[in-house]
Amino acid sequence: QHPCRPCAKYSRVQFRRRERRRLMNAWCPTVLTSSDGKPLAISVQDLYLNFPYERVADGFVGLTLRPEVMMGLVLAYVASKPALTAIVKSSGFDGSKSQAFFVAVALHNIGLALFSGIVMMNSWPVVLSHLSRNGLDAVYCDRDGSLWEQRLG
Image (cartoon, rainbow, N blue to C red):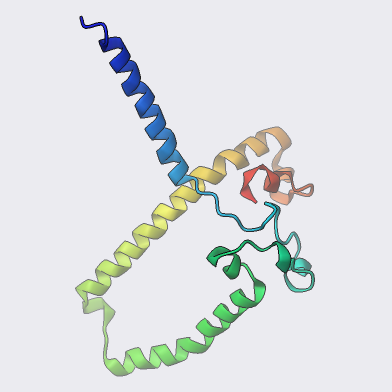
C-alpha cells in the first residue's frame, strides 16, 4: 500500500466536511436587518411612532424593512388588483389552458416549498432547544426576548 493513501483518504474526508459546512452556510444565510444586529422593533408602537431609521441596514433589505415602504407596497397591490383583474378578463386569458402558466405556477410553488423547508430547518432547532430549556410559555410568549436573541432575530 502506498504511504500516501491514508493521507489522501483523510484529505477527502476533510474536503467533504468543508464542502458540507460550505453548503450548510448557503442554507443558513445571514441577512443584516439593522446596523447593530438588534431587532428594529419589539412592539407595534416601534413600527409607527419610534421607528429607528438610523439603525436600518443599507441596501435593498433595509429599504424593504422601512414601514412606509411596506405600507406603500401593500397599498399599491390593493389599488392595482381591480385594474389587473379587468385587464386579464378583457384579454380573454385563461390560465387553466396555458401550459407556460401552469409551469410558472408549479415552479413558483416549488420555490416557496424549498424556502419554507429552509426556514423550518433553521428555526425549529432553535425553538425546540428553547422549549426544552425554558418551557412552552417561554416559547409562546417570549416575555424576556431570549428566544429572539438566540438566532431568530
